[in-house]
Image (cartoon, rainbow, N blue to C red; front, side, top):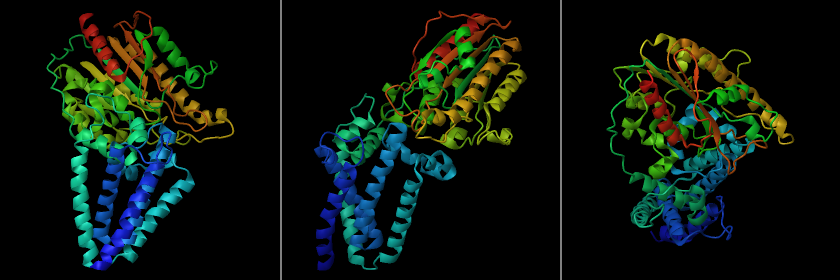
Length: 492
C-alpha cells in the first residue's frame, strides 16, 4: 500500500501542473499569457483534473499511465478549442459535446475543419491512449481504490464549487471567449454547463393563434452560408442579382444580426422559429435546440390555427441532425420533407441536394396546398468546406461564389413563381451565417447576413413597405414575420 501512496504523491502534483499548462494554451489568453487563470477557475481546473485522474486510475490501476492520459486529454481539448476558435471565432462550449454523435454520423461537417496533420495527430493520440490503456493497465486493486477515493472527493469538491462561483451571471448573455480568457477553458466549460442545468423554461405561449381565412402562403427560406458577396468581400462588382431584385421589391429588408460564424445554423434557426432572443436564453444560447422541446408553444407553426393552416418543413438532409425529426412535429409542423424526398445530386452538382431542387419542391408544396400554407425551408447546397487557397483570396472565394450564385438563383426563381399562384404571399429569405473560408472569409466583428421580406397581393403585385432598411436579430425577424402574417389576414 505504501508504494501506491508514494506514486500518487509524485504523480498527482505533476498532473495538476500539466493540467494548468495544457489549459493555459487555450485561446484567448490574457496578458499573463501562459500563467494560471482566475483563482476559482484554477481550482475548478485542478478538481476536474483530479476527478479525471481518479476515474482513469480506477479503470487502469496504473498511476503513471493515468496521469499521462489526463494530461493528453487536456492538451487535446485545448488544441481542438483553438482550432475551432480559428475557424469559427469561438472556443469550445459545453454544448459542443452534444454533437459528438453527429461527428460520427456526418464526419465531413467537422473533420474538414482540421488540417491533415491535426487529424493524424488526434487519431494517433487516441490510438496511443487506447494502446497504453490496454498494455499498461495493472490488476492491482490498491490503486483502483485510491482512484475511487480521489474521484469521489474531487467530484464532491467540484460540485460544491460550481454552485458558488457565480459566473456566468444570471440574466446575462454569456461570452465564452471572455470567460476562457479569465477563468480557463475547463472552468468555462463546467461553469457554463452548470448554469445551463439551472435555466428555467419560459411560460407557455397563451396568445391566440392566427386564423388562415385569407388562404395566404408564407414561405421562409433559411439559406446555407448565404450573404451579400459585395459586402463579404468588399467588392461592389460582386452582385447577387436575385438579392438585389428582392431588396427593390421588398416590404422590409436589412441585416440579420446572427451570432454564429461559419456554423451554428441552429442558433439562427431557433431565433427565427421560436422568437426567443439570446439575452433571454442565457447559456441555452450556445445550442438552443437542446432545450427547444420545452419551448415549442412559441414556435411559428404553433402560433397558427392548425385547423386552417398546412405547415411543412423542407430540409434536404438527415432530419435527425439536431433532432429535427422529433422537435419539428412538436413545434407544429404537420409534414417534414427530408433528404429521402430528393434525388441525390447529379454529376457536377456537388455534395448536397441543390437549391434549385429545393425551390422546385417549395413551389410544388404551395401548389398542392388548398388551405393557408406555411413552408419553412433549410437549404444545404452551399455548405462548406470550400477549397482554400492561401496565396490568392480570390481563388479561395471562387468555389463559394459559384454555390452562392445557385442560392441567389433560387431566390430569383421563388420571386418569379410564387406571385403567380394567385394568393397573398409572404416570402422571407435570409442567410443563416457567413462562410468560414481560410484566407478569404474569417471570423471578425462583422457577422451579419442579409434578409429580405417580400409580400405579394393575390394578383401578384408587390406590397411595398416603408423602404427603410432595418437591422434585426433572428428573434426580431420571428416577430416581424408574425406581423406580416397578421397583416395578410387583415388585408383579405
